[in-house]
Image (cartoon, rainbow, N blue to C red):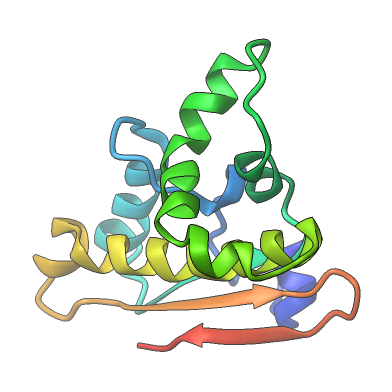
Length: 148
């Protein structure tokens, strides 16, 4: 779904970057370069990490990895590690959908934490605020997970 639709923004009001499961992977220049451009060139004041419930990338991190998808496996490796870190909490949810949705929330919080720690944010005189939210594809509702 286009971010402008969800936020009721006009075309061009938002600078949007999408990737599998919102992962800001330090070994991949794509996300950091987009983030750097937004913060240092466009001088955005707010960055929003927006996940969504039922995320396929998050679900994949909870399932056995496929040898047929080595690039996807590499991309979601940090998410797999996050799932292991929260294994006890995630295992308390009986269904895979519930575990997926909780890990999607935890992942948004982790990506917000990581982005706030980057020199791109820290070194700017007036750092942007980094927020985290999650969107329900089934109901169209957005939930704030981290503000500021």
